[in-house]
Length: 319
Image 1: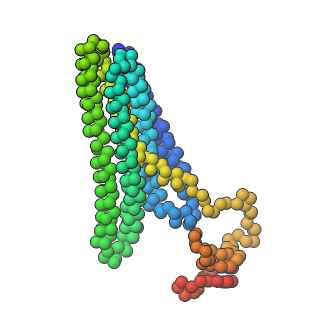
Image 2: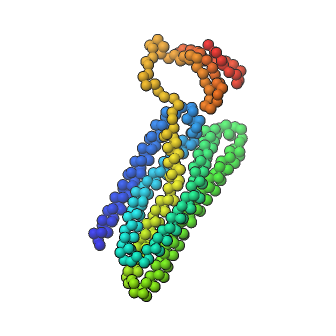
Image 3: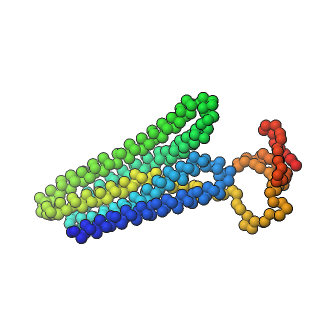
């Protein structure tokens, strides 16, 4: 028994170390990949993802994925082993009470599915609200002197408080929904004990099982429910991590609109520092009409090139 305990302690420490190392390593690699991807973004991509959203995806979303990976390594592999092993040992004692375990498992699975259906849409909302609250905070900090100059502190406070209240209400709904899981788990566990004792007592009276076997079945039943409890703790974190992972993949899978040429040409020595436009057109994404057409000009080094025109005018055929 002492040797088994020592092995268990070593295994627990090893799993904790392995989980932290793998989770932190994946988080590091994801941050690096997202950062490198953002470096190649053009104006079109930045119009799709705001700077506040990119900050949230690089920090909060990756942290959610990292935490789930650490928890998965610590619990998700351990729980099935404990649950399956307990079921096997229970079946060796008696098959008369295995239906109670099946009933408890069905209740737990139904609870997890219900929480997924109810909570998952709210988690998607709270991640978008996190983007908004970061955006408002960033705008307020970057434009603080302008806000003070125009005396709009109260307006900015109300603007931030509105979004902050939405985040609070959404998180409160999620936490209250998830808070139902533990009482329901305990109710299921205690109900399982009652069922095993009730029908086990009848089986003892009929001399089909022994008292020791009944106590063993109760212990194995608790192990099965505890394994589902560990898995349910993962499912508390999994929906938010799933949303975060999708948001990260949106950034990593974004097609870049501007690509470097495969065979770039070297600058001519006599043209170093020149910026020349030849028949350049420009239009915004999704708009058929061109904003600028056939732009031609040369900006030489050491000189100033100015575009002159009324506000909102189109500079067409400017040479």
